[in-house]
Structure formats: C-alpha cells, structure tokens
Length: 336
Image (cartoon, rainbow, N blue to C red; front, top):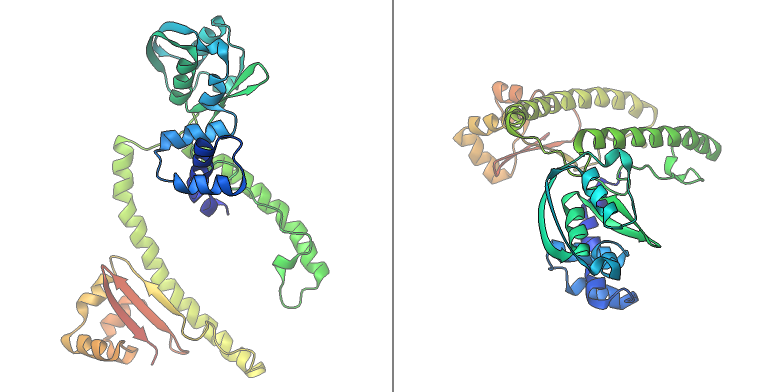
C-alpha cells in the first residue's frame, strides 16, 4: 500500500519547493538538495508557491503572462465556479477545466478594486482548491487532491519472475501462474477502493469531507464501543487460535521434530492494551505485585481463576509471553 508513502509526501514537496524557491528553476543536483534542506522550516503557503513554480504552475505561470498584469475591478456574491469562469472569459482569458466540476464545491464572494488580474486568478484558484497550469496560450485549472493524491491505492506490478510468491513446493512456473491470476484482482480491488474512498471522503472541490455537528457526536459515542469490541475479540480469539495451532504442531512434530518446533519464534510475545484489560491490573494483590517486581513477570500459576478468565484463556503449551500495557502500567505473564 502507498498510504505510508503519502505520509512523507509533504516532506518531499517541502524539499523540492524550497530548493526551487532558493535555487531557482535551474537549480539541480546537490544545489537542489542543499537548498531544500535549508528551507524545510518555511511556511506552507511559501512552499506551495515554490512547488508550483518548480512545476511551471500557479502564480509563477500567471506572473510570466504580461496580459494578466492589467488591473481589474469586480464584485461577486456567493458565485458558482461557472459564473467566475464566465467573467474570466469576458476578460479575454483562454482556459480549460473539467465541466462536471465547475458548479460543485464552495461559492465565491469577493470584492476586487483595481488589482492585477493575475492576483485575482491566483486567489480564485486558492478558494476553489486548485492551481493554474499553462499549455501554450491556454490556461488549465486543475484541482488539487488533498486526500491521497498520485494514486495512493494503486497496486504496482509484482514483477515477472514471481519472486514475491516463493512458497514451499511451488515451482517457478506455479509462482508465475499465481502472480498472473492474483495481480489483476489486486489492481481491480485497488481501483475500486480508491473510487470508494474519494466518493466518501473527498469532496467535489478536492478537499476532505469533514464530519460536523451531530455526525461528530455520533462518532464520538460509537468509537469507545467499537474499540472495546475490537480489543475483546482480539483477546479472546487469539488464545483460542493459538491452542488450535499448538495441537496441530504436536502432530507435525511427530512427523519431523527438527522442522516443526514452535508456532511462534522463541521470545516473541503478545502486547495487549485496552480499557477492559485495566481490570486485571487493578485485581493484582500486594503479593502478586511484589513477586512481579522481583522476578519481572508472573506465570499462570501465580494468577487466580478470575484473573485467568479476564484474559480470555491462555495457551496451555509452548513458550509464550503476554504483556499487558494500560495507561503506562505494565504486567508481563510468561508460560513458565
């Protein structure tokens, strides 16, 4: 997934934008990197303008057009984007935009008195969440997608050799066959996910759809319940699954004890947390706390039946470690 990548896109834009702002569009190589690093602290608006300048878009493009230097005066009250475009047409601006988006998004109210047309166009783009690019003598208004831009959920090629699908007993031919069957399905899923995400979370103007009022209150009420349900299911289902795996492991050990040793690697543990698990911390006796502090952990034999029930059951075989962490307090339980 590219979600993680999108989290550091602002840093990338910052470096490139700052590099252009300081070194100019011709700055290259180490000069770009040096300039970008030295200006990371610049404010967002400055960096955005610099990034637009680097890409040949935004105010830098407007500034290069002498025809947009003339002053204009105009007043709008809750105007649609199509109304604004009609005014630009009357001002002699040649432009292209997406028709299905023109009347969606915010309404524009403005009062301009004898200001450069390029400044007005730049302000309009800011309000409607976009930027101007130029192809020859024609301007194109392009929305800035503020959610997960650049195909955040695109599923890239998996490689032709099938090396990502190595599995015991699979020949290279079988791996390649699996890749060819799996890759199209993942790409189709990613496409649908992207469409659903943008429909539910990104508005027509390219901005986040932020829940308001009653919807926020509803989400605030539901969140603790959903969180508690997730922790409860996690706490109960994992030990049960572990027991099933342990039983299967015992059967496999009979076939090849050297190959099948443990369900989980030695020393790997579980880390639990959640509101309900705080109860087991409160239930510890002074003797249990003292033993835990001295030894660093407790074993199932050190727990009461009620405490074991709070955990939803613990594995009866194998070496394992459970760590419960709630509000800075920690309890470690080991198998032995």
